[in-house]
Every structure is written in structure tokens, then in C-alpha cells.
Image 1 (cartoon, helix red, strand yellow):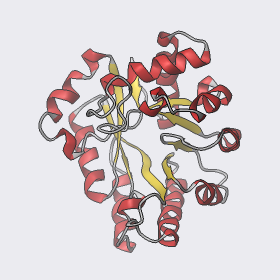
Image 2: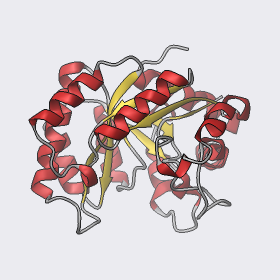
Image 3: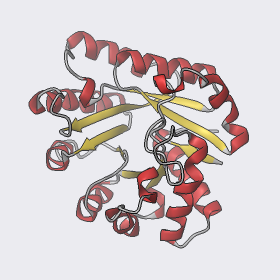
Length: 255
């Protein structure tokens, strides 16, 4: 079975057929999913889905692109959500410098730090979003050496990956590793131990080849599995098993 450790089934992209897609995943080979929130409403929606579907778990957090207006009331609400059943991580959180319309960088860093501190206090792993912000993201992470989690859709250098791996972090691999321009991904995969690899869709985004440009869902993960298995010299079945166990271990899920 496959464990999709990052999929946004609370997204509007699934409004037309959310129940049909989620209900069908186990029979399509997907046994576990983590749905990370990006703000308080989507975090609550992720929890609602986790409560409805046995194979779905939730993460709660405030994404850097959605962090404008975050205040003490927001952090208090997030703390309460972290205590809900089937919440397994704080995320999706991080830094995003790609969009000029995003909140100021200093404020993004402040919101990230508060959520990292909450995760440490509550002994939860984190799901990190890092887009065009490698240096600042690493600078923040270095201040929390006891923290563990996954860098979602890792896009950094092999050197950055090596530093994270040495600290005990996991790296998430998504549809873009199947793209022709995925130059760094094979190098990163080469130095990533099998027991630190997670597979993700970021559904409804980042569909792998041959579905690039179309809506993504967890049933497309075999294309990611096959590419990783090829790079790491194992069978797809073995890669599925390894990443299943990795996800369960990081998010402390017993099934």
C-alpha cells in the first residue's frame, strides 16, 4: 500500500467529487493520507476529513502565503487544533519568497518560529514548505535542533539535503521528480537513505508525467514510486513498503 504524506483534499479542486476520490483510494492502492492545512479554516477542514475517513490523517498549520493577520488568537486556535484526534503534525508551515504578494519575509519568519515552538512544546513533527527561501529556512531550522519533520517537495541542493539528513529530517518527493528538468532530484535522491524518503502528491497540484497539467490525486503516486525505485536500485514494491513505514514512523501512526 502507498502512503501519500501530503495531499490537500480539503482544496476546492476536489469540491465536485471529494467523497468519491477519498472513498476509492484504498481500493486503488493508497492506504494512508496526511492532509495538511494551510490556514485555520483549511486545518479544520482537514480534521473533518480525517474524522470521516479512517485512512486520512490531518496536519494543522498556517502556510507562509496565508499568514497575513496571524495574531495571538490565531496561535491559540492552532494550539487547540493540535490536540484533536488524528492530528499528526504541524504543517504546512515555512517560508515562501516566490510571490511578491506574500506577507513580508520578516513576518513569515516570525509566524514560522511560533509554529515551530508550538510543535516542540507539543512533541509533534512539522511539515516544512520552502520555496525560494532556502537560506532563511535553514537559518531558522538551525535554531531548533531538537525539531524533526519533513521538507515537503524538497527543492534544495544536495548539500542542503545532507545537512537536514544529518539532523534526522525526512525529505518529500513529488510529481516534479518525473519532469525532464528535474536535474537536482536524482542527486538528492542518491544521498538520501531509503529510511528518510517520503512520497507525496501535493494534490491537487504537481501531477507527475504523464498527467502533468491535470488535477493530481494519490492514485498517481506509482509514477513517483517507480522513478525513486529506479534511482535507488530497488523494486517499486519495496519502495512502497519502505515509504509506507517511513511515513508511519514520522507521524506515529499505527495501523
